[in-house]
Length: 326
Image (cartoon, rainbow, N blue to C red; front, top):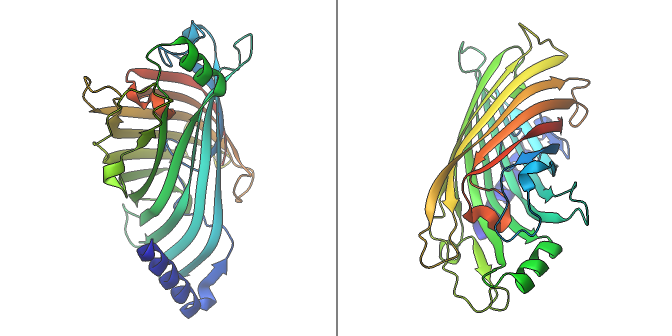
């Protein structure tokens, strides 16, 4: 924590030195999350079909009805400044993702909610003379926290009706670093953007989760050990060509990530799983301001179940439609 505080002080000193180029409490255009970022502050409302949730879920035939997946996000800006084609920004991002069985006939239960919040530093170097790479960006989350919460109906039914049910508390502090080529929010026209990043925990020995003996009915749950994650993203936006324009920007966004598949049983080894998250659709540009534009996308996700304690399950799929505030 002391290192993060020192970084924060250096940011404020640098901002005062470059006061003529400093802007307080205002959002910037660079360093925005790609649509396909699994964890991001983007606001989305998604509806679609999934193939499975958990063997402990009491509502059957989940593959025969639609599920709702709202994504809430925010970025609280602190300070930004620019000089000599460099841009710098410090903010506080966060968000929440909820999985809801909205069309279940009895109670339309909330299955799970994931929450996260943290600190973020964004840096960009613009390369106006380069024909191929127009900018290089760096996004650093020096510290963020995530915790998850199973829906009460799910937990109560599992605890009282399923003999081997466990409630596992996903809760951890981590850091994350991403490198971006051709940041799309600083460019116009047809732009191919790439991102690669890594993530790990601050407290490796504690792992991603902890348990309460009452909630796991006295069973011993092994700690997670494969804590390191990495990911690659591609974002291609078109405003020139077939079926697109400056007002209707066509976007294809994809993420490929490698994460730990948790194991809550001693007899089952923790493994690593590749997952991919795909979006294809159009953004309707109304304004240059944040959250004034709207996007409509088809989404397909396959791989590790990304929701809360269900991250011990592979082979998860979600196919749906997404409305995005951009």
